[in-house]
Length: 79
Image (cartoon, rainbow, N blue to C red; front, side):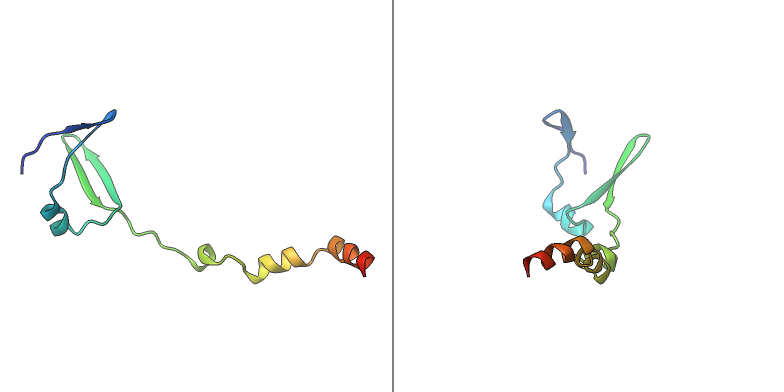
């Protein structure tokens, strides 16, 4: 398929017809690879998410946050 580059702000782009996108199976994130004379659009690598990245409150974080002697002293004065 031959197409033309279009202006998009200060950049240039290519319109990709929906049937080609459907056939390619590309998702919303892609990677551009450049070689002399060509630009390839390939699926972006899948990011591996570890359990550490998904935990908001771990026991270690809670322990560090809750075990503060200065707070114990402050509470004693209020009791």
